[in-house]
Image 1 (tube, one colour):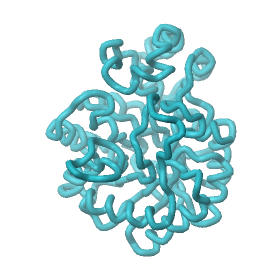
Image 2 (image 1 turned 90 degrees about the horizontal axis):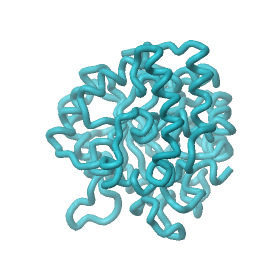
Image 3 (image 1 turned 120 degrees about the vertical axis):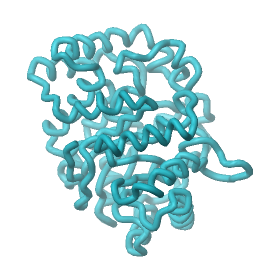
Image 4 (image 1 turned 135 degrees about the vertical axis):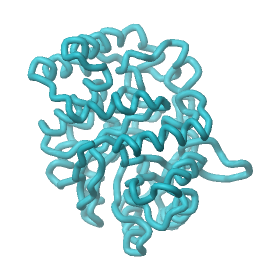
Length: 342
């Protein structure tokens, strides 16, 4: 596995692992199986592990974020801390999904909450310092300078090594960078989610900030392995893009499959390789974080770091976004994602 240098001197494996996949968001799993996948990822050199305080199931009697995914990752770190670059996130304080009241407040970024969230994540992860700590979502009622200022206090206290931001606009990134160096922006970026290329990606390139694309495989749709039955029981089935436009988006999927077949690769490898090519085109480091509950998929995804797409492949794949139908947003509030605030 290659390594990549993001912003602020943060070096990670060139491919990360999205820990949300081993919660109950996309179907059921158990802790033993999930821990097996996490260990297999590290064995494969995928040592950049991404989690968040909101991932998982609520703890019995607990208020606030779920925290169970952080506790699961903590079990990995108990044995392999020196091998792992761990990223976690704070700021989402309520359940998310397409059926959630768009007027409900779902995030907090006040200084007091930032400090509490850091200590809570450290406790759940069972570690002394977080390698990369993201603001998961912007609190519209709090200046981003206040949120990032409190995050910077955690760096000064030795509790966090690097700061990141998720789903921020270019202007928000610039404001944050004026307070403390930002190592990475994490937002959805994939063959069919390219809105970040308008302003956020160029801002990252100009400021020397790395980019960590989440859902790089289109929540699994772009792999061509999903079935209607699979998505019916989880959040994807309720989304506009995958649920409502399943049939309409088969044409976009066909383009990916055609390129993969010609190159002797899988859909997932082609989709990830396109992101690496897009990063080179934009002039910034890109570390996708696909998630999986399957050990066999790890080696498949890892092989994408060495797949170089020819010009014909890139040109074909560049058409996928225009074919896609339905927004990438999973809530009714358009401002939940960065493009809705730009």
